[in-house]
Length: 311
Image 1 (cartoon, rainbow, N blue to C red):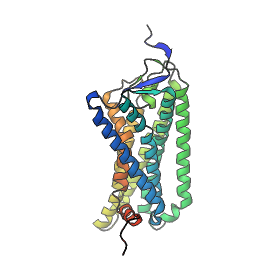
Image 2 (image 1 turned 120 degrees about the vertical axis):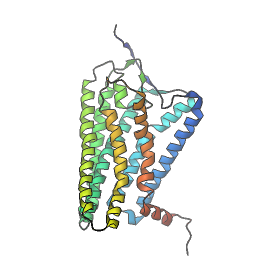
Image 3 (image 1 turned 60 degrees about the vertical axis):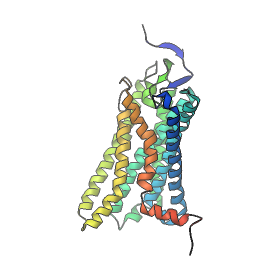
Image 4 (image 1 turned 135 degrees about the vertical axis):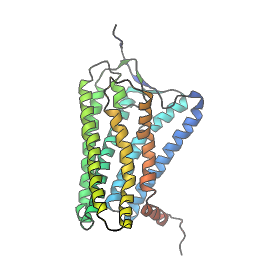
């Protein structure tokens, strides 16, 4: 007998991020703290890079775009998750699920490409310091970001539309705490062949392609840094790039791991843990690791405070 009950569904049931219902209050507090931390820290990065003129450079321009993407990504997941935790149910409408797929796919694919652009920016800053500001002019940076946002919009729109036109039948349990393409495709009772192909292509081109380009950039950076005379210069160059490389490794590896698997692969609890890393943890850590530990940004913070002491 065919395992599917051909009753069209109007909503999905999310598995949820946490298992123990007796700790629901603790889960709400943790989720709220994560969300507030992400909102405040990323908003701070955006504000300080806009209002403080010395930060009007390519590196901080890309950093502010990264903060915007982190806000979009985490805001597409955590508010609904908090709502479900508070009301004690894990449901999402079909339309809400499609919207979440689009928003999260857009923010994720854009961030992958942005991290690649940022690695190229660091390479130019270290390898071509005298010509850096000319090569990474305001027009060049704007064009790069416009291209990144445009490609991500097209990619997420195509993948979301392909998912939206599928038939979904009972059972309607999404084995994750959010709607993203792999677990939702696993619930379709119609052919998902075209969707699978587009997901694989996007993952190979945007995911693995971006990761390989970042690795190439850092191989060139390391080669350049090793030629620098003096340990102080080498340390300064490595410290500039280490935080970016850590973020790239965490984000790219978890995204590729999730999206490279076929929908027929059994979804395991560890997949949900991986999803938590790139949906909740990374957007919170990005501004803390990459921005708020930056001495220039911290100095800018104290200078733009409206209540700072004046002589």
